[in-house]
Image (cartoon, rainbow, N blue to C red; front, side):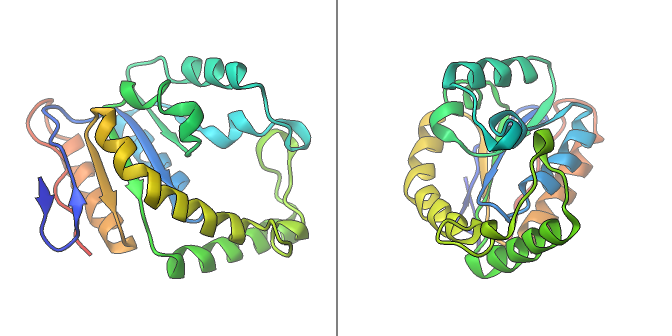
Length: 204
């Protein structure tokens, strides 16, 4: 089904989703949404970055990453946020009840990302496994801003086809207002008895 005015594609669920994957570029609000969804479904919030980024920003071998991700999402309810489709699509996506793609425009994502990164640098915020962002994350040719631009282009090229082939219900939200409205609908549905409804349409 295509919801009017937002080009958001949705395949309806017969039950309220309890295993959810949240996709989107850095700064799109994946972790913020995933934390709230995890609270609503009463399951763990699994950050792919926490599995992918070891001490000193080292990354585990692919097989280890997949095994740790599978173990973290073996329960009946969970919400995982992150991309890494090459590593996660065949391990995670097919086991989800719903995939949410936050496809916000760069004019929204980049200022958010710049503010977040600057704050983390200034406060020396400790992230996953003791890692901290440095000025190079903001002021270099490989900055998080450059990464976000490249990632969104890649998502636009890859995700429609990958999601269509996954065989899992999915929704694409293209604005902060759409995310807020969709979350409000999901919150309302999640409080109903099982099988009585599904998250409603989003709009710009």
